[in-house]
Image (tube, rainbow, N blue to C red; front, side, top):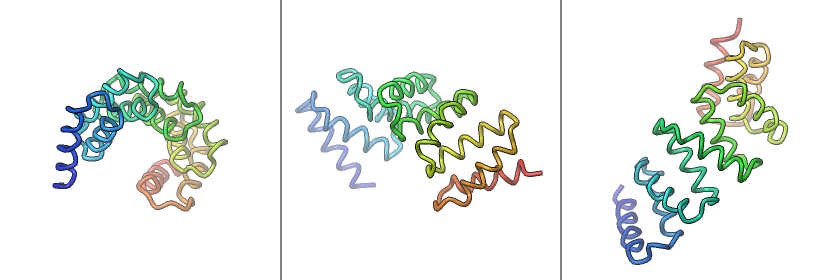
Length: 171
């Protein structure tokens, strides 16, 4: 929209004046990411990581963007973020999304067993867990997990996806 374009222009001008200001660069990256200008967002996250390699939100968001762009570097950055904050729900969610795309279901199952114990009400983890169980031909357990997602107190596309997957695998 016009407001975000104006905000981006102002932030870009400030960045020219203060090129080392991480807050400005991070604001720009987040703005571009929200607007789906992924290459521009990635450029700013990469610059932040160049200065601060352990900047968790920059590393994690760059992994998400690379995953959306089908860039194989997504896994590398998701693993870095996970090594920095293995109990962070957002970081784990990113790593699982990348692993789902790469179809690494064995790793997903081991990660999500722990995650579900730590966050039993986080329906997205249960959905991804069920998805991997289906890939491993463990439909009985997948059905149980999908029913938990469907009956969770959420209103999201994950619930719709869970219903769709459940219809597909139920005998």
